Image 1 (tube, rainbow, N blue to C red):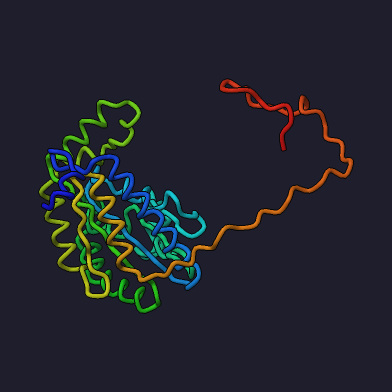
Image 2: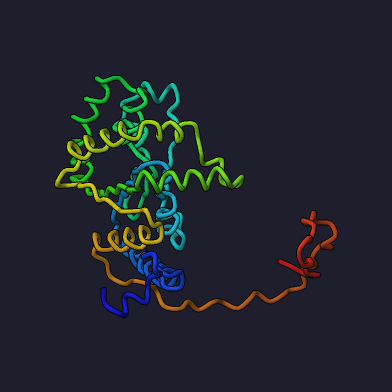
Length: 278
């Protein structure tokens, strides 16, 4: 490693916080440029995030969307399917969330639930699983042919690191809600999940939409690497508008405002409410 690169990392190999924040800020500025390009060109971008529990999918997604407009960059994180949804074509509840022109949709888990948790935990039959494996590549080829840019990330975490993250969540009451019963069962079925993931890759990493694996034992590295890679997959130009001329405030034409004491103010536990607002 070059000397100037060595200075960017701690002795344990993790990136220094100051450099991480600097690089993240730069990448988020580039994501804003990408957002303008997606809107201007009418692109339809669909990004799927899969991985083991506590791998850091949510953290990557948050860093991608933090500076973006929710009208252009939407996050989809579906819960357990309803009884009605269980009777639908399997992909049906996902289709309605796909991007339209000028949108980027990020799936925090996706239709690949069937190849992962549903298969391992027995929530689907063998017939349903094999039908998914047969259908999924054709479904995704159809999406790509329709003009959707489909990008699939597997956020990878080691057994040891997942165990440490589970332990930290368990110690912190503010984060303990993240430890669901399903998360705990995933630890006891680690090998089964590995086998399911390997099979999923074998059948569904297709030329039109391959799987990309992001090493995530160090969350900061995973975030920077994933965003850098995402930006490299979609050629874009900088269409960021220049500073906008802000109009002058409308002049008061004699309108008398009601007394502010007539309004229900939130108690100013911090600071004081101004005498005149709005």
